[in-house]
Structure formats: C-alpha cells, structure tokens
Length: 240
Length: 212
Image (tube, each protein chain N blue to C red):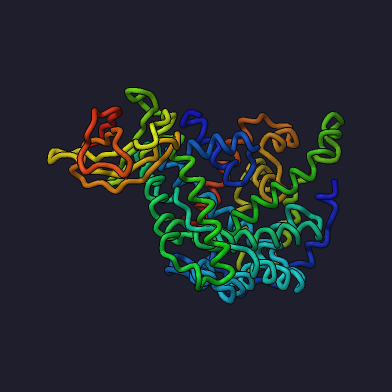
C-alpha cells in the first residue's frame, strides 16, 4: 500500500469502516509510518468522543456475569511485540530472543507451589507462549540455515549478547559421540553446550559475551570436551 | 433492517458517568487508567471500578451499533472479559483507558453486526437499496447528543461538517457500515466517501480540540 493511498484510508480505519483485508493491509502500513500512527491516534480520539455520546445503563445482571467470568479467565502476559521497533528484522529477532529468555527465566523461577489459580493459568499461558516463540524463532532462524560438513544445517540469530541457535537434520552419531556447540572469540573457544548425537534437531538460547564472534559446531566424545578435539563441521558468524 | 428499526434509544440517556475521562484535558493519568493498570496485575476489585466507570459507555455504543439488546449484552460482556484478559497490555503512554476500551468495543460491535448480517445482506444486496438507503442514523444521534451538556460541543462540531462528511462518518461509526457500503448507500463514488471520512474526522478533531 502506498503512502498517499494509506493516508486516505486512515479516516475509514479509525471508524472501523474497512473490510478485514484492507484493515490488515493498512495495519502493516501503519507499523512503518509514524506520521500515520499519530494521525490515527488523533482520529481515534475523535471516534472515542463520538462513542461517548450514546451511553446507556446495561442491566445489573451483566455486571454480575462479567465479574463472575473474569474470576476464571486468565490474563494474557504483556505483549512481547511492544518491544519491537518497526520493520527491523534484527529487532524482531531481539524480541524473540528476549521473549524466549524471559519465559525460560519465569518458568525456571520454581515458584509453582505458591501460585494462585489465576497465576497457574498465566503460567500455562506463558509456557504455551514459550513453545510458540521457540517455534517462531526456529522458523526465522532456519531461513538463514547453512549446511554443515557431514550433514545437518546450522542457523544462528544473534542480538545483544544472546544467540538463538537452531541445528537440524543432524545425522545420527555413534553412541559414544555428541555434537558440541562452541562460542568463538578472539581469546579462543568456549563450550556453549552439548546436543545429543541422535536427537536430529535442537535449538538453544545462548548468553554470549560481547566478544563472541561465531558459533561453531564439532563432534566430540560423549560428555563433551573442554576444547574441540575434531574439525569444525559448522560455523555461523555473529554480528559485531 | 433490524439494525435501524429499534427506536428506544431516546430513553437511553440517564446513566451518564458524571466524570467523563475522555473529555478531560490531559491532566495526567485518570482514575480509570489507574484502575485498569491495577486490574492488569490481577486486581478484580480494580476491574470492577473500570466496569462501573465505563459500562454505560460501552453498552450504549455497542447497542447503538448492533441494535439488538440481547446481542448487545453479549458483545458488552465479551468486550469486558477481553479488557480483563488484555489489561496488562494497556499502556497509558499510548492513549487513555477510555479510548482503548472504546476502540475495542467498537471493533467488536462492528464485527458482530457484519457477521450477523453477512448472510441476509448477501440476499438483499441484489435488490434495490430500499432497506439500507436513506437512513443515516444521524438525526437520532443528534437528538441524543442534544440531551447532554457535555456533548454540546460534539453536537456543534457535527453540525459544522458538510452533509456528506457527517453522513459518511455517522453511517460508518454508529451503524457499522464499511466505507464501500456507505458509498453505495449515499450513491457517491467510493474514493469520495473515503476522503470525506478522513477530512470530516480531521475537521471534528480540530473543532473538538482533541489531542491523542
């Protein structure tokens, strides 16, 4: 949608007078157009004033029904997309990576025993969201996957000291061998975790130092090694 | 159309909240905003405050659009449950609670009226414009608006629009028609209606002195 075209639609959008397809197209335009967003906020405020012109008391039974229903309705977690700046792929990755990290941290807090029913619902939501985020992150990462020597593919999405690593299509290794991830920097190479030799596919969220320059993969004896003992089969550079 | 035959709205204007946060000129966070923020942390009593402050506004708007009282109640309930679910996504930096909830309510009402009418309209669309034409809903709205001192300015501003601006905006907002439908009803080219909606709203914005 071009900018002038979108601009003329803002009024209709503020009045909810677009059909679903146009609404979706305009919304994607708005995400990349700060002036449009400002105008939309103002026109929405006009609509809100118009909306206040026709008040009417609902039946008292409705209040009771609403308050009863919310007692058993879990609340959504805060929207992760709010942290995303417009149209920036990297920022999208950052949102995904920090979302996964936040969710993992929340689940890892181990406070489950003292949760209220409502909080349990929220926790279930958070876990479901974690699974969704990981799936999304994997798919995003997989688009940039590079083949590794001997089979399998490696993809790394990295932002601000964190890297989401997705490795897939991994050939099975002999029972006494595992895949090992490494964080490489000017100072050398440090282990960044082990992936089982017969899992086929895995993803990891790594907290890396700012000095890390690449994520590398080798095949190591079961239990992993302190330093690589075989040739690097895959390597993905990290943005500087 | 059922949507336009219900004429009991004239009796509707009793429960106007004394305090209308939308008309407050930016004096920081309103009581509804702070109640909604507390509701976002799971506070059901704060949520009840939000409900009490905005139920008449939401129900009135929803009923105006969907017309049918039973459906309006259903939609209003859905809206408030959704407000509860999403409460901790409310960000006062991006607009006040009244606007946030009103926008959500209007969208839901419009979605409901369109899905409910999709089937019957498809049959009627082939026929003449009888049922849909000639009903702007505007006079009704103006009548009600006149009952409220608070909305004196809105009424005056609506009167300051051209007929086409006013009818386009009114049919879309208060009756839930798309701009294409409005164009058809007013026998006016689609691009013209689209433009009139926008410049009409801009004129209202300037007349009302609305700030986002």
